[in-house]
Image 1 (spheres, one colour):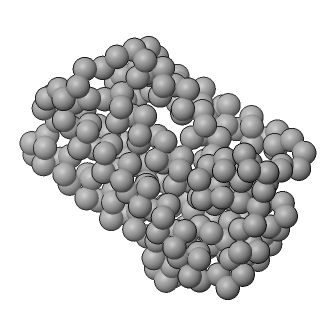
Image 2 (cartoon, helix red, strand yellow):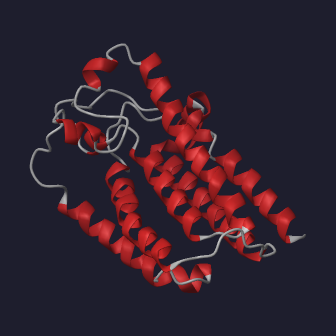
Amino acid sequence: MSGWSELALAFALFLAAHIIPMRPRLKAALIRRFGRGGYIAGFSILSLGLLYWLLMAAGRAPYVEIWPQAEWQRWLANIAMPLAILLTVFAVGAKNPFAFGGHAEGFDPARPGIVGLTRHPLMWAFAIWAGVHLLANGDLAHVLLYAPLLAFALSGVFAAEARARASLPDFARLAAHSSLWPGAALITGRWCPHGVPSIPRLIVAVLVWAALLHFHAPLIGVSPLP
C-alpha cells in the first residue's frame, strides 16, 4: 500500500468511527449492549488506535513542503496543548446536556463546571490540538491530515450546539451560565467558578501532559520541544 493510499484509508476509518457519538440511536444501542463503561472504554481504545495509525500514515507519506517550520510554531503548540488536555480531562465524565447524546439529568446550570467555560469542551480540545499541529507541520501529508480534522472538530461544535438548541426545551435556562465560545461566559461575568478546580483532575491533567511530552518522540518519531 502506498503512503497516500494508507493515509486515505486511515483517515476514512477514523472519521467513520467518530460518527458514532453524533448518532444518538447508534450510541444508545451500543451503550445498552456493552454498558456505559464498556462503550466509553471501547470507543476510547478504538479512537486512540485509529488516531495513532493515522499519525503514522501521515509520517510515512511522501514529504512535500508547503510552508517551512519555525520555532515559534512549536512554542505555540506547547503552550496550547496543556489547555486542550485540561479541557479533555475535566470534560470526561462531566454532566453535559449540550454534548452529543447528553442529558440534562443531574446537571446544575448554576454550577456547570467545565460546561461554564464552554458547552463543548471535548470538541474544542480536539480543535485546539488539530489547529496547532496544522500550524507546526507544513508538509502536504500533515496539512491533508490536520486541516480536515480541524474542520471536523469545528463542525462538530456547531452541530452539537444546533442539536442542543433544537432538542432541549429549556435550553436558555440550562445555558444561562455557559457559552459556545471558550471563556466567553467567564469574561462577560455570566459564569463565576465556585471554589477551586478538582485537584485529582488537575493531577491527572499534569500526568497526561507529562506522558505526552515524554512519549511523543518514541511513539510519534518527532520531539514536540522547540
